[in-house]
Image 1 (cartoon, rainbow, N blue to C red):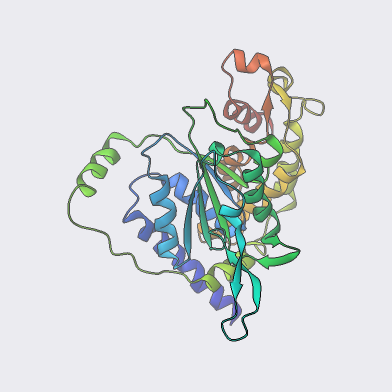
Image 2 (tube, helix red, strand yellow):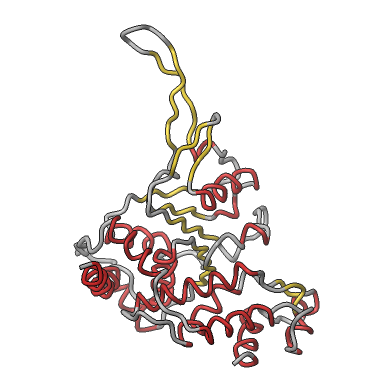
Length: 324
């Protein structure tokens, strides 16, 4: 019975992608990667220039899953209490006794969009990242669990970096995937112009419930991955570290490489991608497809690489060629 239940849920995933496709034109790789993070139980960092429908993508996914959605616009004056909530003084009208009541902030949702997270100071960023890691908020010595499933999608703008607060590398590592959005193709952009400037609006249907997502997250961890592929992931991650690597490209351009969390993320996300493609076993293609969003924020380049325009994606591409 449980196997049939899982198969029925997996069969709904193409319907979910089709439902999101009613609103989001193009950006299929980004949509798949966000859904991969959801199934893997992690969080995403989205980077793209303004106008690429980052907010619309996240809201549409939440609508198709009937998940509670909240958007937080990060600004330089945003305080931690604006995210997690605050205590307010209340009065019992029957007894006249006063007491403090915790009012939950916007972090208490299933899908939270942290818009332009690099525009707020580190103290406020830390409040968000603590919730990401612990899946709870602690206020006044009391723990308040966050709803499940719980997904944070943070966005940052690659332009206008003056006056921003870039996330430190250790905090970037908390994001399961670092997804970069590109401009749409000419055909896709033409379709965007046609479909978004009229009166018609897509009527989204609910495809999966909160419990369905939790069941799919449980299934994801049960997906088979061979020892050979785990060894491949381990060798790839270790090869990204200059001290351990035999790849000349890495020794020349990389300051420090990915840690063990990168390997864990690659295994788990490869399993999630297999489920998303209605498979119950990981293939090498899953690893190749996810190496970029998983490793690009976990590899730091040296000054020479920056000066010569070498990118982390170029290093990852060389790693994929070298480690077979």
